[in-house]
Length: 348
Image 1 (cartoon, rainbow, N blue to C red):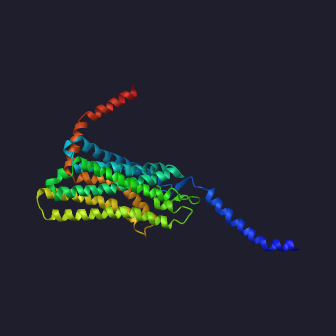
Image 2: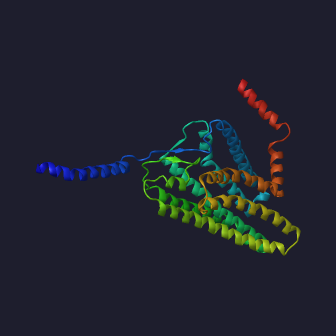
Image 3: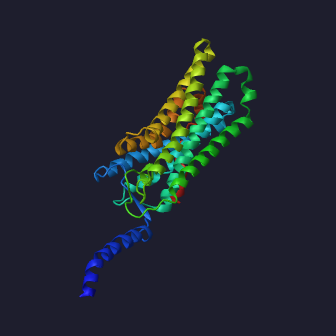
């Protein structure tokens, strides 16, 4: 009888203990996520072929437009100036920004289940912050170049020497590397043992962090503080630089200042298109997943394709160099000769 009373009194405590501890331990230690599921831009299967075609054409345009700028700047000696050197580096970074996730997104349009391995997900997080962080600092360098050219024109070539330009580009990549390393440090040790669906077309850091099995409130604040500091500080430096430049340009009315206004307008347009979505995603606290997804498409695809258009349509020197490049490599009859040679090799 005593044994039965003992069993009756202590059995609930024993049952409760065995239900709580082993379950949590099993979830934490034995259910590690090895891949994530990307929900993509749309769940509609009817839209997938259409989106595949559209984004394939956009990505091809990004590659052709930006590589054309790089080829034009490197091949024309008249464009071997600090401004165009920085512009060519901006085009290279734009290709990188568009390439870290866009090819996978295009390929995912053709499959039903869009998965990405854990390591590949971390790689996407690493590269998106490396490239975007580098582009932010490079845009600041381009603003500094315009400040020196307009506000201190007599000392321009002395201040913006080739060595200074190379150092500015290296600094942009260094800052981007430090930024992405600090961001990745917040994520690499997080435990992922449950949900693995990312509501985007690539592994965006805020979305991946929310899938961790622990409370990530502090980590999310650190991520926002890190990205917000880089975005806002770069943006404020740009605002100050362009404000000083605009005040200087306004007091002058020569033909050179008209050219400066045209170049300045292109720079400000690029800065607005790039920083707007980045600041909204990482700083604005009331954005929704659908809005973030559209903005992510904007700064990873549309901004890299708009930059060549903005700089070429408003820049007579670049357009003249491209016309010279076209006349050199695309002479009348040369295209037909190339096509004829290709057909001859195929039939041989």
